[in-house]
Length: 121
Image (cartoon, rainbow, N blue to C red):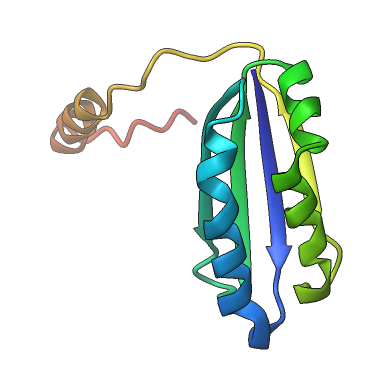
């Protein structure tokens, strides 16, 4: 599985246009063969930064996406950016089992009540 992370630092005056562009292509990206998931986030510390995350089953399906109409639209947003798009492609080799946060909270409460911070010195 591959994880693609794209950061788009948008001109302040073009944030609405970027948002509309991303909304127009996202639904069609998720229907592309091999696309597991796609999400867009906005950085809460930098309001004009959009972060696009996509999960792909194979490198082949991702490479086909790079030649798609939707990706060409994304590349066309370069005039809306303050700096070139930053893209990282990560290969996921192993996915850990889901973390049990409920038991962690119970364990931390036990340690706190028994004078153990859980830190080893």
